[in-house]
Length: 286
Image (cartoon, rainbow, N blue to C red; front, side, top):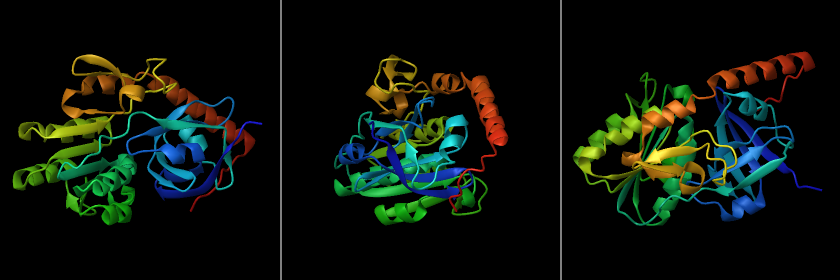
């Protein structure tokens, strides 16, 4: 019989944002910063990529926002429930070396990717500066964890409800003016990565972004995750997901991310109708 992957712990971190620890020994054993998994809930399920946020023993952590049919369905699972398939670790790991002073920036749910990168950079001997930002204080996640692993941590909120009133790019510009920054990692929504990575261009600082295009098989076969980097076509699943931010065609990335918006909306509506008919309340993770 095929092994099922058990949810060991399921917690709601913020509005529609969930943290799951999934027992997947073979993934946990090999996972590195920057890599991801692809999971499928059941035989009829869609395959979705989720970044590996942390590893503990035989379990890996994923953090996601319930925005579409599959993430909404995933959010109904609780501790003890099982997931049919977990494939990984996929993608190339982050390029971790001793660079000097490194900045790791997370926006929104993208913050999920930052602790593992910060931890590996710290272990490689770097001075690590973390910047995490969200629309408001309620949506800010992993603050304590980032504070623990970084030498310095800055917080920004769009509405000023916590930390600096503004964006991660504002803090980054200030830091770049004040001191030598050797490498920057940025993970978040595409527009946030585009704007924030633009801040490092005048300083010539190598900047990495983790791209999240639509992905299907995760092994470079289907081509749905193709992105243009430095004028060349790359596949985010096998060539990335991290790329040189200054080489990425963000306009194309954002356009391709919206390609199935209509279908995704219909799929989510059908799932909601099905849950109402079946009277599924789902699990609570409070």
